[in-house]
Image (cartoon, rainbow, N blue to C red; front, side, top):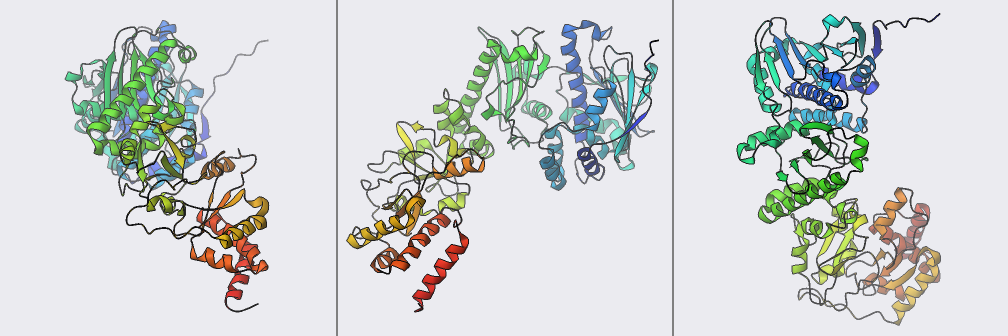
Length: 630
């Protein structure tokens, strides 16, 4: 006998821990700008309509007799309720539980910590960026009810919660549900009752959602005629002359989920072999997910105004901060998401859009240094990833790059500026890499370069260790680390204001360096006199071949370094301390001195002595000896 499947009844479920924490922050929100909730719910509704539009390409029956996709906002000021309904794809029971009961996104804990301390518009901006906008409804509602029927299904479901840790899911009669799609009903709190008023809703929609690609209708009160708030026209299809700066800003905010002003807008139509329209924005502030490990972009792909996916790699990953849309006239509407990644047409679009954005950034850098400086401050660390990933555009990216240098003061310098100021006989662009800008600016490795007026790039972003070690050059000048290999500064004259160096090391100092090398043995690759030091006694440098010391540290931290290279200990033969130590012939003291000089160089390099106890004992013995002890 075959059993008849039973329809599930009402089910009570707890939220995931991360959702519960987020809901607590929403319910007890102190954000002054709570308008974000409506933008997020409208955005979700628009996404549902676009998903249906895409799925209906392969299965037209999903549209039934209702092909006009739309969003309807209905207010009931007397009942203090607000409903946002769409006739999009809808949700099944399992989809409802997954979408509204969990957060399926990496970086959740960092987001939670940041949003907990955010205030005002920053908090609202984070909500939109992280994609958890549905839960922002609890900033204004004491109860939220979501009724949904998936396209093509004969079941409808009700999700309900007061935002206090749990939710219920239950079946509802089809006559009580939308014919297709989702309806979200908010039971507004007393302090949020203005969100059921016409002028408030019209203002928010026009400011924040006026350019979603789905028409928005508004019903002022039960029984009232529906009025149009937005026609759902695709902004990117309009002539640029018909679009105001405010229109661009409003669209940017809706597509990016941010509240800032775009720093740069790129809108163009490509014609010829392939036809497509692109509308892209450089944000005015860093998106929350800029440094996510997956490094995914956020450009939406449309085909003839039909949304296809936001997972297509339409830009290289070093431009992942760019937001916007690309609409192709040549891709087939029934293209699968898997086929997209292998499409030669997509490759051509990616190349064209990337070239245009890099070109527009170059133009901005040439025409408005202050505006470009803000872009570089926000995104320079990411753009520099292209220096070792994008060989084709490397020269352009080097031209865009801005650096803190020993000559830049509080500002930055371009490589064009750097090369224009090269010193006599200088044949390389000098760099120093580290994880702290202030510390590397005070590094002893820079002393000989400062004495000669040689500018050095101060590279403190993690990505710098990678591209700087990849053998690049700019206008024929190679990049050379001041902490690697021989400095070779002898041919570059000292500045007039710099003190002339003392006489070169005599036999006594030479013998002292040989003794240090013998004592340290395998701990160092060599011990040699330095021409890069003027004020400090010692420093550590890497060998000419192999990784720079900072790059080596990064590899070790990532577990990708099999064995560390032995550093070279450079000693300043003109330093008074070295001269005094070289004159001391006490063998026992010399052994302590050799190890202390190495540990001193390690400390100057941002490291710790390898053996803290031995370091302390050696230092104590030398101090006691200096005070006349034995």
